[in-house]
Amino acid sequence: MGCAPPRSLSMVTNVKTQDGYNLSMQRIPEGRIGGNISGNKKQPVLIQHGVLVDGMTWLLNSPQQNLPIILADNGFDVWLANTRGTRFCRHHVSLHPSQPEFWDWSWDELVSYDLPAVFDFVFNHTAQKIHYIGHSLGTLIGLASFSEGHQEDQLKSAAFLSPIAYLTHMKTALGVVAARAFVGEITTLFGVAEFNPKGQQASIFLKALCNYPGVDCYDLVTAITGKNCCLNASTVDLFLQNEPQSTATKNMVHLAQTVRDGVIAKYNYGRPDYNLMHYGEARPPIYNISNIPKDLPILISYGGQDALSDVEDVGQLLDNLKYHDVNKLSIQYIKDYAHADFIMGVNAKDIVYNQVVSFFKNQQ
Image (cartoon, rainbow, N blue to C red):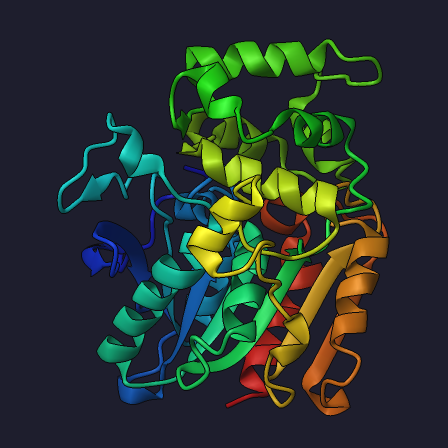
């Protein structure tokens, strides 16, 4: 870990989803000396990670550039979410990770089950509305969930860092090739429903992608995220030691559908009759981002070099929010930032995290 864990860091292990998964969270209820606010004045902040990582990624950077610690030092009660399938969330009431059924989910289930479960847990323990932070996939499931009104009564504000919603203009060569390759039959190709980036089948798949023309995997972080300007080298080393984490192959297929189809929609089962069986209609329903409450305070921070959260795609997201209350929508554009800078940047505190802290404090 990039720094010693905060003394107040604790593990919460009994967060139950309605479909039977047991999720774990990390909590930092107090900051370092001088950063504490007593009693019920502490506002809860829930931080949601992206795909193929988990909540501990946020703690890899040094304390001075570490978003959860910075928030705790500023008097917030910080909760780190971990999605199903990651290292701390591999338990279910009746299923085992060795069973394909354990992995029968996509980011739809993160929207419908995981996020509501952690929101309910934090809300019930703090009795206060929650500030939400999402990065990468954490932004997508937040946007989709809030558009369906799942957390409307529990949500105080939302900060979306390096948002992914529309992915049509994604410029990372590895990502584009992967999006073409991740089709519904890929679970048969792998023979497993778990996509474990450290596993043999996924390694073979990744090596095959890296042999495609125009794909350079010498620097894997750059190949996936774009040219990051400001990464902390020691943090990247720790990141590669601690991550990546498993996810469902079905989840990767769903993300690939989002890239190919150019819409934010539920999982496409590939046949009208299958979709009809699941949704009551031949095509997967769309998540209507414009349904997000127009008075919800939102901060969107994105980078000009981000190959996953491309500027044009962020522009389409912002177009969906064009009727949002103008005084409730804050936008930050960072010309030199790419996807990983938002988590592992040496200057993330000054450029991004201070903005997030100020944004949340303005909502109190």
